Image 1: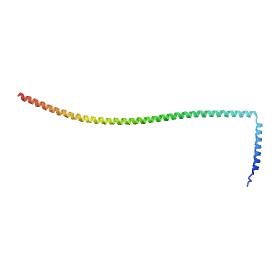
Image 2 (image 1 turned 45 degrees about the vertical axis):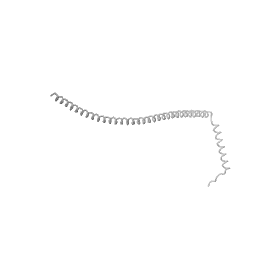
Image 3 (image 1 turned 30 degrees about the horizontal axis):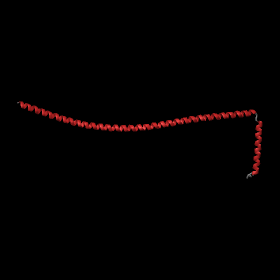
Image 4 (image 1 turned 30 degrees about the vertical axis):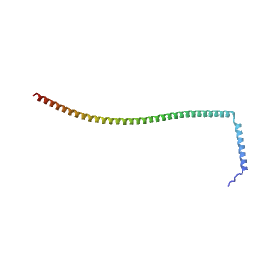
Length: 148
């Protein structure tokens, strides 16, 4: 089995690692030349420019998305208004058709009643014509008999 290092051992080991890392940082700083710094700064500027472009494109995308969402909401509203209007017109058409059908039935009933009345009146006219003809014949016969 491995021994578990004590806190003191760990502390010493960490201090050694920190010292080693410090030496490495100094070496890197000493080895670095001004060209590396300018490259580093150039890379930073490019990174900053890229981040700005990304932020601008994100802003433009968000604006466009909001505009499109607004248009979708307006179109939905228009469609809903159109649907409500269509339903109202269908209802009005149904009511109008119902009223027209009732008027047609009433007109047909009136026509039927008028035809019956007309037929009755024609029958009365025919009877009255017969009575008039009989009365004229009787008058003519009475005149003829009176002349003889």
